[in-house]
Length: 313
Ligand code: PMP
Image (cartoon, rainbow, N blue to C red; front, side):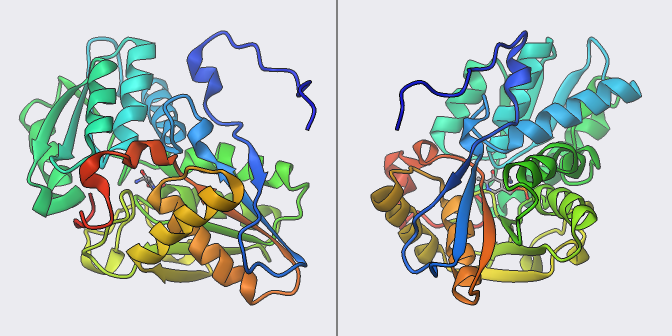
């Protein structure tokens, strides 16, 4: 590998660094020789996750529509990564940010949000991300004029972020060769928006949605749709297939890509890679792209091991 790499971007604003993430060839064991497995490395976003795309899209669309104007506070519920994204975008654009999250959200992320200047309201961890969603709606309803409700579960600007950026990037980075796209379901914005773009370019691209095998799981950021409040932006027909992943299997793949590729990825990325390998195993040739939402450094806290299961953390 040469030390003279591609020219580094020169940016006018930190928000210009959102998106344009690397696509990385992976060497995960068991993938047939004729199948290419690629990871879309979303921890390269400035706030450290795929949700920077969503946060920037929601805030920009809010400004464009007039719903977000100076003096208003951005508010939303989030299991963590959208919170960081909104805290970053709000800070960079000069809006106060208030975040509602289950008290079980990792301390790393709470500290990050506070460092960006956001305030946090905690909800009962046993009620998961649904409990935080119910609470934020109460807060907004009590003072409609004060808030811009980002509403990532209902806001079309969420999937739009992926229709406009994630999808086109994957298409370009694979030279239009992508055959399978594999990504986890949380709000479903990633799957719905990316699928819409890829299917427009080539209806034969197979989109595989990934979800935890049941409601009580340890895959932060992912939703088990059958036992959760289904997000309004979710379109079950956006994906061609759904694969359920067991928490322990996802964690094992995180260890495997750390050993094999030197990648420290988050647990939902492990789930996407576990499912991507299942997909690859059934193929003789193909270009499989797995979306890796964040890095593993967010899950290093002592209480974040495999034994700290919680629903929808
Ligand atoms: N993984 C992680 C770590 C996340 O934070 C999220 C966002 N909830 C997802 C996966 C799922 O992404 P989406 O909300 O776009 O479905």
